[in-house]
Image (cartoon, rainbow, N blue to C red; front, side):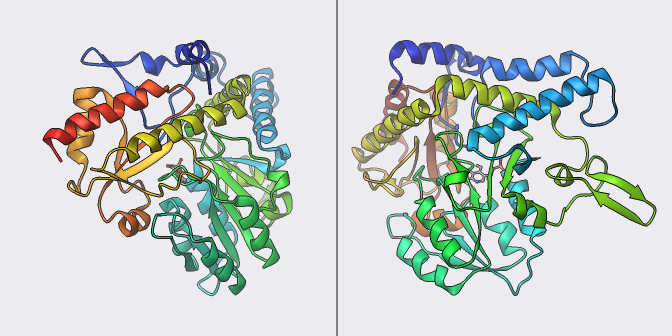
Length: 403
Ligand SMILES: Cc1ncc(COP(=O)(O)O)c(C=O)c1O
C-alpha cells in the first residue's frame, strides 16, 4: 500500500482529480469502467497531434519513419508488459473488438461449443453466443464461479473456453492458471478476458497455457478507442482477418492478394496512432510506480471496501468471500431499493462521488445473484482509504432518507 507521501505524489499526476462539482472535489470510484489519465499519458498524445502527425508504415518520409518507430516501440513495451513477442500484439479498438476478432476469425459455427462462464462481461458472452453453441459454467449462490462445474463441463471437450481473469462485478480473480491448464488438457482453445486484471497486476502469458488474451488500455491509464489482443503466433496466424484494406497486405493484383506478416495482417486501415503512443506512456507510468505496488494498494482498498460494506446490514455484497483474491472493486445491492438510479444521482450531484450502477454489462450474472440493480465502486492507484470511508458515510446518509 502507498504511504501518504507516495499517494500525494501519484494524485498530483492526475489532473482529473482536481475537478470539482459545485465547489466539491470529485471522488472518482469508477475506474473499472475507465480510469483517470496521468499527465504523462496526455502529453504523449498531445505531442503527436501537436507535431508532424504522420501516418505509420506508409511510405518512406522521415516523419513517417519517426512516428512508425515510436509506434512500434510502444508495441514492444506492451509485449514486455505481458512477456510475449512484439508480433503477438495486435492493436484493435477495445476488448470487445478483440474478442469479436477472435470469435469471427476462428470461423466458428453452431456445431462448435464454447464454454463460457456465468461471471462474464457481455463482451465475453455475446461474441460467442452469436456464432457458436454455448455451454455455461454456473455460479455458486454467493456469486463466485462454480469451479467444480467448470471441472465437469470442460470434460465435454468444448472447442473454445472463454475465461474472465478478474470479474468486473466483484473484482475477484479466477484461478486462471488452473483453469487454462484443464482447458488445454481437454484440447480447448483458451481465450482470456483480462480487461480487469492487466491494469492491476503483473500477468505473464508465457507462464500461462493460453491462446489469446485481451485488455483495454483505457482501464489502465491509457486512451479510449484502443484495445490489445495478444495471441500465440501460430494461433494469430490461424485467424481469418475480419477486416481487409490498406496496411495489411504485401501485394495486391486485381484477382489476388498476399497478406502481410503478423501482426499487420490483422490491423487493416490507419491505426489509433495517438492512442498507441499514449498506451506506451501509460505503461511507462505504471512501470515507474511498480505493478506489484499497484496490486498491493488495490488489495488493501479492496479489503477496506469489503469490511465497510459488511458492517452495513442494509446492503448485500456480491461474492463477499473474504478469502478470495480480490482487487479494489465491490458491488452490492440494497434489498429495499431495487433500482439505484436515484442513489447514484444523489451520490454524484450532492456528494461529488462518481460510481456505477445497473447491470454492469453482466446482466445474466446480476439478475441471478442480486435480482435487482447493483451499485459498484472501483478504485485504483490514485484512491485512498479516506475516500472509501467518504463513500460509505454518504451512503449511510442516503440510507437514512431514501432506502
Ligand atoms: C471484464 C471486462 N471485459 C470486457 C470489457 C469491455 O471493455 P471495452 O468496453 O473496453 O471493450 C469490460 C469493460 O468494462 C470489462 O470490465
